[in-house]
Length: 91
Image (cartoon, rainbow, N blue to C red):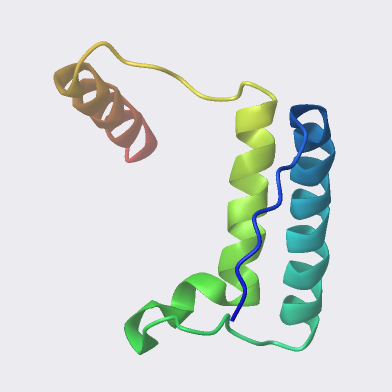
C-alpha cells in the first residue's frame, strides 16, 4: 500500500476547524433526534448522551459563554460559598 502525505496549508486550519465544529453539531443533532448514543461509549456512561443531559450541557455552555459563573481562589472558598447558598435556601 502506498502512503501519501498531504500537507494542509496553515491558512486553511481555521476553515477546517469551523467545518469540524459544524459537522459535530449537525451529527450531534441527528444522533439526538434518533436517540442514538455515539459508538464506543461504555454502557455505564450512556446517561451522558440522553436528550435531557445534553440539553443541560448546552445550557451550561451558554451560561459559560455569557460569563455566568464565579471563580474561587481555593477549594475552601468554593465550599464556603456552597454552604452559604445551602444555608440560605433551607431557611
